[in-house]
Amino acid sequence: MKIIGISGSPSKSPYKTTEFLVKKALESANEAGAETELIRLADLNIEPCNGCNVCLKQKICTITDDMQMLYEKLTKCDGIILGSPSYFGTVNGLVKNFMDRTRPLRGGLELSLANKVGGAIAVAGWRHGGQEFVADTIIRFFLTHGMIVVGNLTDTGYLQNTAYGGLGTLQGKQAKEWHKISEDEVGINGANSLGKKIVEVLKLMNK
Image 1 (cartoon, rainbow, N blue to C red):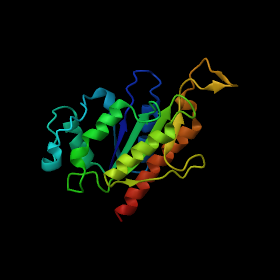
Image 2: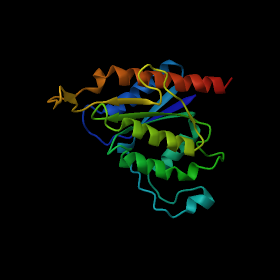
Image 3: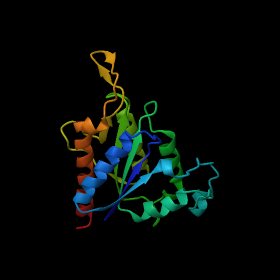
Image 4: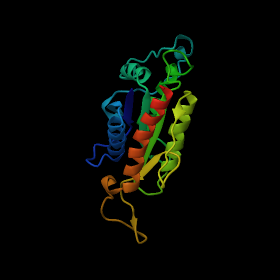
């Protein structure tokens, strides 16, 4: 089985909070027996959908960019982990462009995302920085494609994995130092659980 982890962070910061958690989920999935691959949207050229609607009839996208390469990877994988930072309480532009450009894969045809297993990862600079709204957007994206969404069975979360890394608060005042994502045990445990859960579901489906 093949699981793709997609990091939607545009950040060049050494913290790379979203990518850090996506990697953790992939490592967990790999340990559970899956082949994994990390894709960074920031490294790719993905133009926004121009609304030409050609894909509705021909199931192809007329825009020539790196999304053409992703179509093949997406249709051949078994599971997708999509991570996004919170930008004003929703996914950022890179992730939204990616989502919109998957329109040719919608429709339950052979080259589609239907029945693949999906998991969401959401990160913000604050503990309550819109992570659940980001996760909800990713979940609805998966469901719109007819994908199977896994939940999170950790004690600290039920929907999907959320975490924070950034300038939090300390006794009512803004902290002077960045909260490192590597110190967020809640987020790390959730990512590990997510990777294992996706493999577990895929194994059950393939029995």
